[in-house]
Length: 215
Image (cartoon, rainbow, N blue to C red; front, side, top):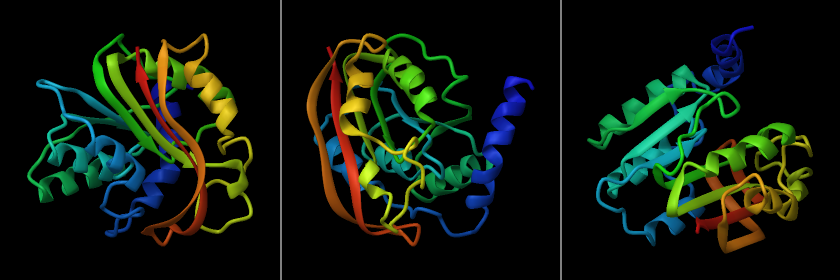
């Protein structure tokens, strides 16, 4: 199977998820991402990457406040929906259909990388998320929110697989470990929150939040 075939196969589920006229996870940015990013000043000629941003809600929001947003995601339909949302707000987003494990990440090109609910098998996450962080510039920020392992019995969204869910200590060790660039910890926490993003992400939830900065 070629790399392109792998991306196509992986994206079919998400194409179906995004096939409705409605936006599967709403049109507004993730609250944790928006809170963190709102505190940053977009540098001149900046670049911001939003991995696995689906229909583009986070990337479009960031573009509205001055970030040059880029997305990679498995879904062709997600790309189409992202461009529609960007047009609604008179902004542009560079969106590539690509896979975390296959994507090349040039060194030190991004001022910001931000993602929400980017859950992959742990064997992929352990290798490729730290690899992705090498594309942050010195001083660049990494912001992420995901479901904690204690989310399993809750019905407010997220995968029903412990391997896909986040343990704070485990994921943090990966993000600041030997495979990652030197990262400073600004904030990490496991917390309870009430989600109201869409019918798929709604109700009491247990989440892990990260805000790191490259040295």
